[in-house]
View 1 (cartoon, one colour):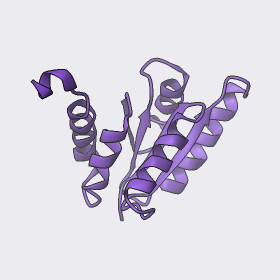
View 2 (view 1 turned 60 degrees about the horizontal axis):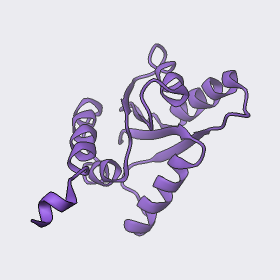
View 3 (view 1 turned 90 degrees about the vertical axis):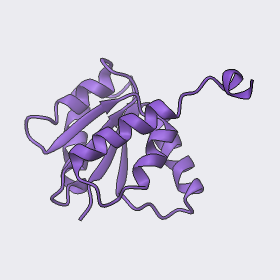
View 4 (view 1 turned 180 degrees about the vertical axis):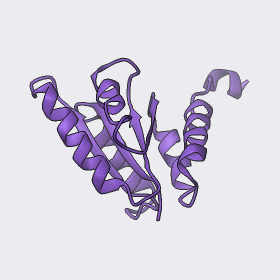
Length: 133
C-alpha cells in the first residue's frame, strides 16, 4: 500500500502537471494520483464534497498527500478542510520537479513524503543564468 496523492489546483494546472508527469514516466505512475480542478464558476461547497470523495478513494491505509498550487487560495482552503476527517498532509506550491521526485519514493510514509515534496519543489527552482556562469 502506498500513500495517495491528490492535486487540488486552480483550473487545469493539476491536470496539466499530471499529464506531463505521465508522459515523462511512460504512463505508469508508482503512486496513485488524482486531480481536483477548482473552477471559479463551480459551487464552493461542491469542492469540499469532491475532495472528500477523492481522498477516500486514494487512501489505501497510508494516508494522502494533498498538493495545492497556491497557499491561502481556494484550492489550499479546500485541502485544509480534509485535515479534520482524513489522514492527510497538505503542501502548497506544487510543481513538476516536486512530483517527479515524489514518484521516486513510492514506498515512503506520509510524513517523509512531505519532506521529499518540499525538497523536490525547492531544488527544482534554480537560477539558470547563475548555473551557466
